[in-house]
Image (cartoon, rainbow, N blue to C red; front, side):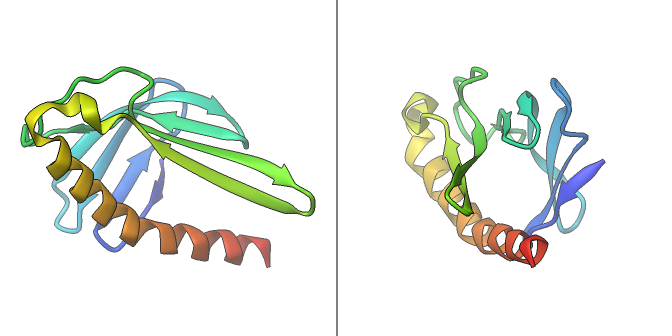
Length: 120
């Protein structure tokens, strides 16, 4: 299994179509799950995201979740990341958005570091 290990825990999956995705806290508890919904190596990866603690109301489809795409721009490679529609998440949409934004604030510097290390 491949994983990305940010400071708040570990993101784990085999990253094949329909594979399970799990976010584990640093103490090993799985708090968020999902499944891989798209793979076009090395250009695209998408997967759903759902709260396993039942803390947030969710309406989820394969289009909701996280989408990573890579594209070329001259001699550079651009990483685009999008995440689904928080407006579908009911009464707790703003809370889920805030929790997600906090996670991205931690994850994006690590993604940048890994990309720059791989490029050198």
